[in-house]
Length: 193
Image (cartoon, rainbow, N blue to C red; front, side):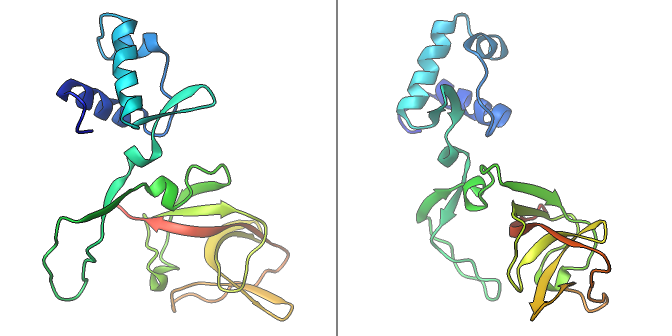
């Protein structure tokens, strides 16, 4: 963004905030929403953002580039034990959309309710991304429907026996009485403080 003017940077930040991963609206809508005097001005701003690789075209529509919606990943590790000094060496710009495959139509996000997975670090209020699939391997964390109720648990299989295992010693394993259907496998979690 270093080659952009201050106004172009502000415009881009507003686009990012307003539209995120959605396709940008028409030139006329942008003109009205951002108080441009002409559509030609909008085109000039959008072209500057495209040249800076902050916008990308997909299927004839403009989007804020995935890499531009991310957060900076520093190559300095942050210790959870003893403190260390952070340096300013940025490794790359990351996008949680890409890291968790959130742009894929086969991935969806659910908000966690309950405390049955706390021993794996999954807490109430966390967001879990689920890759839709009907199959799971032993020890995958899955979103499953067991006897008509959806739940997030660890899928377990030994020989021909399958069950769902909570990650909280206060809860018991769940064995299907009539049905167990895997909706998808967890790919990651996100938490807001």
